[in-house]
Length: 351
Image 1 (cartoon, helix red, strand yellow):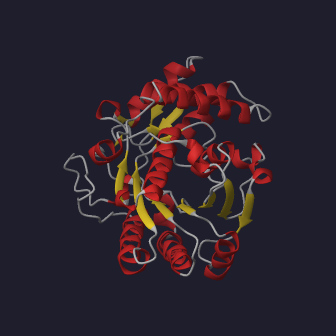
Image 2: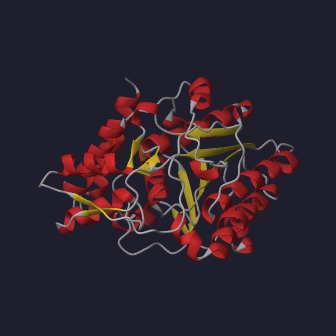
């Protein structure tokens, strides 16, 4: 589905490179021989990116996506062929607490990056990674397709809808003329080792299990399209590669699991507890937090029919990979575990 040899010696610029997804993507690209430059806020203490020392293996720039002049200087100095946009304020609850910051980051940050590419001459392929939450969700329990209306409700989801629209406008107004292939990837919820974010169920599970505490489930019946981070990362890289080689593949793509892998929050926690062992348990404690969609499902036929793509690790294998990562590593073996899981994923992908 994706040929990682393609990325050897390619110059790749990634925003949000030191976040959870960004760290896994950077690791895959570095190991593939890409020349990498990342642009992100200061790396958080005890993050996966910091623990494996990835900054020493790539050009890592500390900068705010809202700072246009610094971003433009970084991109122009690096002269990338490929740009992947991961930087975001990604948490729904935080978007209710700080909506202005969320919009500034997720909308104007995208505008700034697109404007940098409009003024650059090296870029050939651009991917904006958004979210499954960009669609107008009327809770009808339908699977959203790429042609459905964009209108996320909460500030996070809505800001990502805006990011999609901004990308579409720049593509039609400027980037097509510059022969830059442009796509967006609307990804479902990703899980994987090394995610330490707040208000995410699998990181919550890991924290509780390591402390010997019960897992607290806030929204047990919420349905989400969970997938392993490597399924998402390899899909992103496939899109980047294919549209680089032929711009006819530019477009908007849902990236999510097969329908049989759609589960509720309670179900994925039960899988985690069974896999973790040690009599791990949970408690349901609804907290009447801000509104979040209760049902999210993606129709991924487009990416399957266009590229022959398919989910590699099902939900059970994805949860097993998380548990193995978190139970069997310490700070000195994290990178070895990443390499082992990436290799196993590639082998399974080729079966």
